[in-house]
Image (cartoon, rainbow, N blue to C red; front, top):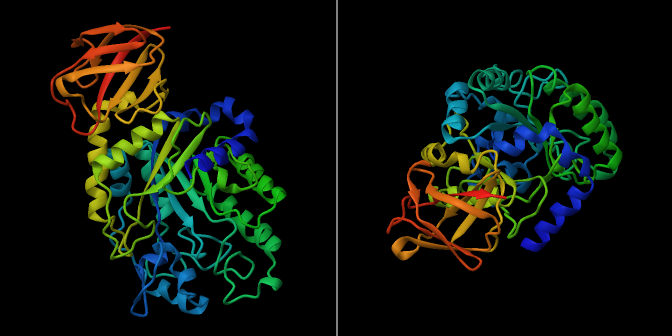
Length: 422
């Protein structure tokens, strides 16, 4: 599975060699960590339809339960997220150490979480809430220094008669998918890139039947409207500015291309009231380190409730990740993959003159034997202690020996810095 994942990312990336040298991606390469937000009408049923728990991820309930469009539309009358607080959401991302925020402007159910003039099937026109949360998030992201990005489902739209996916309300043979792209998707992408200030990225999804020409025209439209705005790999047809791993799938080895993994904190993206399978803070931090050591970005999701509340387990875990990054962020942000590969107990990241060892399993007695370091090592220290608190370091053959404290400085990941000379 992992080998297939790496191969797919590389196959995509071969088509975008120019992007590897494109400075437009520098902010994203350095960011490493972003907040994904899946929020929409699907938060109202929260995984249950007509008394039945519907299997699968929460935002797919319309599809999984084959809910007719006219029935699903009624959820808009119940959707009134009066507890939504843009400042609180953006502040959570900031406290987590996340550098960008990507939210579902339109998911596969077709409901628009922004004020669209192309349709009335949106949060301003179809709900009693009557506000545009994307406007409020845009203002807060600008205020708090977080890049705002939009998720937009460009092919699947179970509400629109021309969109892909709904074969229980609409006859597939009669769908005008080309018209849907031209007269619905493109105008809405234009709205998102015109009405909300500078946008860091448009995050497309599930390309399915979209043609190469349609994918290219959407990429070109994004870059025409905002030249600095990135497009992710799920625009389809090996286009976009970087490659996207599959959901919750981290490659086993260094990929060597620009890539990102979208991931959940529990088992769903959109809110499900009965999904309590929360990953631990330790697991999430180690996944972030693992991804950074392989040159990727971690886009970690929260699924707010219909009332606009981010579940408490997410609220607890994200700032805990931020606290670890407050001490160890130098070893994550702006780094590139380190030379150590395939070690269960350690991951490595690097920047000029520094090699960072993220030690998951601290050795008994505190002596680290680090194989395969080619550069000369001028010194070592714990990142949490600072460069003045040096550790004894020596070399035995191809291994660097660092003598640290007897017990792990950090129970999750202790970062040892090696000062290197090329």
